[in-house]
Amino acid sequence: MIRGSEWVVDAAGCDAAPLASTPHITSLLDDIVHALDLHPVAPPVIHQFPTPGGITGMVALAESHLTVHTFPEYGTLCLNLFCCSPRPEWDFTLQLKHRFGASDVEIRVLERATS
Image: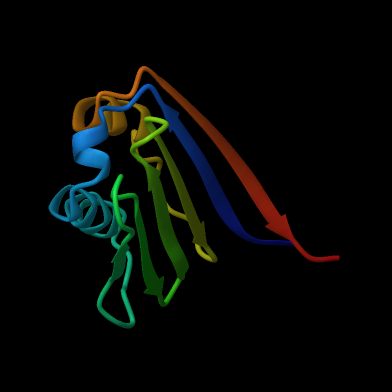
């Protein structure tokens, strides 16, 4: 039985500045939550590390969780969304290319199941 879907998204070739921008990351998380009709159970938690300023962000959801980790020094972004109820597809590739200048986006969808 399927218990949910998990999107594992890796973006490379990103511009460093938006990867180190709390407003950019907060906007990304907010837009995913709204576009997919997700339900946060608390405000997002955002932590920015010292220079080069990578960011870790997390939103606890009634449906599970949404996390992001940025590495400006490598031009990469890692995102994870787990939902225990069906959700429409979101165009991660288009959005990450537009928002962060990603040259390569890899998306893996894992169907989480129990026996």
